[in-house]
Length: 230
Image (cartoon, rainbow, N blue to C red):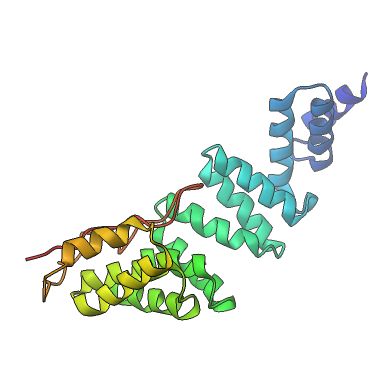
């Protein structure tokens, strides 16, 4: 029998033999059989995630995320985090958000902020998932740390508009454009509110609605909702 046949025989006797699964994966790769190689490797890692380091799990997660396999990517990122990979915590929070797991995503961003209170992306993404009052607090924290960041200023302005505070909103929207003249959402909000001395507070959002939406991979952060005016 060939080496491969010996490993296949071992696996037939013990379907949970990690060594056989891993080695068969190597042999399949060598033979150009990518699909069975991946299947063997995945089964081996399901049985023993410590076969590879955190960086490999993170790369697997990123690859599966790009393929649209979000549930599997979440597993990979969790394994990387278990081995101390801080970067994967952010990736996992984004995946949870894309899967509609808002509470888990928010918990992930909050956990990042506990370690790094000035993490701008975590601040903006967490705010997009929070209730209006908490969103304003997080956006305020972002502009305090990054006063020259146009999007952070603009998001705060938009949230303040939704809360009915036009004067404060206008201040931040103008700051957004002073720092980023190409930031279109700020123009839209200013145009909608200009000349209005007061605005009616936005009605309670429908279930599942928040102050913003999270970006997909490779897309700019922030989808803005227009305020409701009288």
